[in-house]
Length: 280
Ligand code: ZN
Image (cartoon, rainbow, N blue to C red):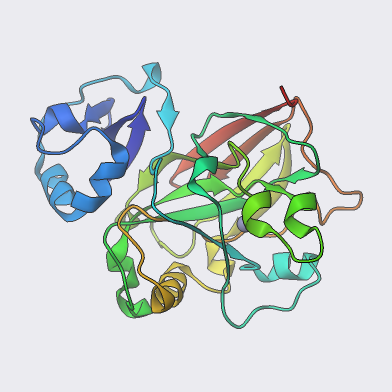
């Protein structure tokens, strides 16, 4: 199953168009995409048995983030070996965790204002949780995933890394710094949910290209680790780390500039186009 946030309304992607969840379910399920995750098992059962047709064409609507207002957003650093190497860091033996504050979330076709500094791109697979999760082992962690989507962990490196102590959370949380979408895709839709190709192109030039099978800590291990420490909630979002090719690791460094267009893609999920503009 594929879900989109179509102009603020949860919608299922069908062959011919979109199915508006609230109207098709007679109000049994809400229009708010974020509210759906707390009802995920019932929603998933209903959707699997639904036989009606689409209620809107796909091309007339603006998509938002499939999880627009999570209670918590987690992000994982140094989760691909080639990216750890380009960053001059050792491969970690436990996940490196930070947050992107939820105010940074935007949709898959956003226009993002560049703040002062050095703004970088990080293509990432994003997992959205389907239930409250605490102390779940990796062997059962996929049962807690509503689906997978695509994200950019945009990062202003000067604030992120400024001494005396790095400020990952702030430097990665400017408005629009967490584009997500376009679709939330359930794990059963992928030939292998742990081996998904992803990458990005900047003004048409390929900058990142990898596969999630190269992750050091796959999705299930990330969820087990996070939930060993604190409760995760239905609808929470996890950015799972970026592969090599970021702007900061290039020689010369390539940070985002006004006028840049960043296309981010993942197999089975689709692509996002993020446009960057000068500070207003
Ligand atoms: Zn990242």
